Length: 109
Image (cartoon, rainbow, N blue to C red; front, side, top):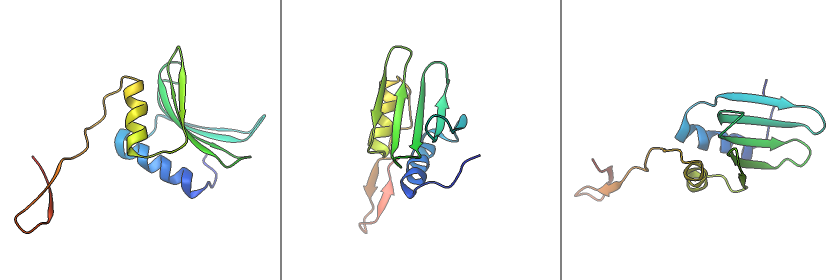
C-alpha cells in the first residue's frame, strides 16, 4: 500500500509510467529506514525503480543490473531514457514534431 508522498515522487512515477507503463511491483519498507520502491523489471536481475526515502524525502531513479547499479536524482524523460539505455531496454522514441502551414505543431508520421 502506497502511503502519501511528495509531489516529486508522484511526478517521477508519472514520468516513468508514461514511457514504460504500469510498474511490476511496489514495496513499502519500514525497517531500518522507511522507503517506498516502485519497480519495473525483475527484482532479482535487471530492473528500474523509483525510490522515495521517508526520512530524507529524497526521490531517486535507480537502474540495477546484476553487475552494477546507477542512480539519478533528476528524473525526467531524458534521464529515464538514459537509464533504460544503460539497462539495454528499448523504449518508444520521442515523437517527432513538425509544423503545419499555419505554424501549429503536428506529429510527423
